[in-house]
Length: 389
Image: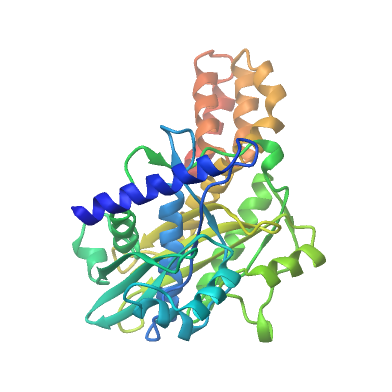
């Protein structure tokens, strides 16, 4: 209880100090970086759990009470294994030399990382470090057993640890995901990176193809061809400063969509999949959007392609909602013209073509209340139900 109170007070004080130190014009929230957890036995899990945690934190980064960001997430460079292990081993403060490196490699005010030990049940040794002083603000040992995806209700890969860490940091129900940005603050061109994995490349490729096709169909963002490669043409674990500079120099992209997958199963079978994506601003390195989805095989005849379609469908809807201000601006004229069943159906079709499935459903249902376009509205609702994951 005392630790929970301390963390809540710390976060509140951090935000208050940030407000006090800056003018309204230059106001910025504290920056948090999350780096992959070191887990030699299963590197994909260490990367995914950091991404999954980032998505969970994104959903708690906005204070409704204060009407502003509590913090922002930033994309760090990929840290070395030795540095990650050093952070996980500190008792109170990070050594000065390592701290200097961390500041340079993360561009953040605070860092969350750790290591994973596995002796049957995974133990995530997690650290929250204040990079201005090197002081360890919080540490915790979070447990995660792959079997819990079956024995604990509504728990998919990575859900338990991410939710437990966020709860331990003292966030409440008034801390929510930030509202969609205004149209002028949205990136217009996006490059889609290969989804990170070391073992499941065909699944990652299928997910990437589905995301690309869905975004091309919805048209909320323009997609830039190509990808950003790391050393030896390997997919980078993190889109660090040099990667972003390369993207800025060689592409028109304003943001990079990237992420990772994790798979659980036994004897080569797939039971549970997790897909976490994030969108990184090329210039600032800020993670401007993040979302995680999961899927599982309940019966042996469940098709993997259906699970991937459901996972990527949820991701595409979340991306469309993030770009909602862009999409809504595109259909603003149609909103003003929606006065009868036919025009409401036209609006529903416009929303659906831009990935705003919920708004499309509302428009088609409104069209049915007029009675002059039943066939068109019913057809639109059918398309909506096909699109719902």
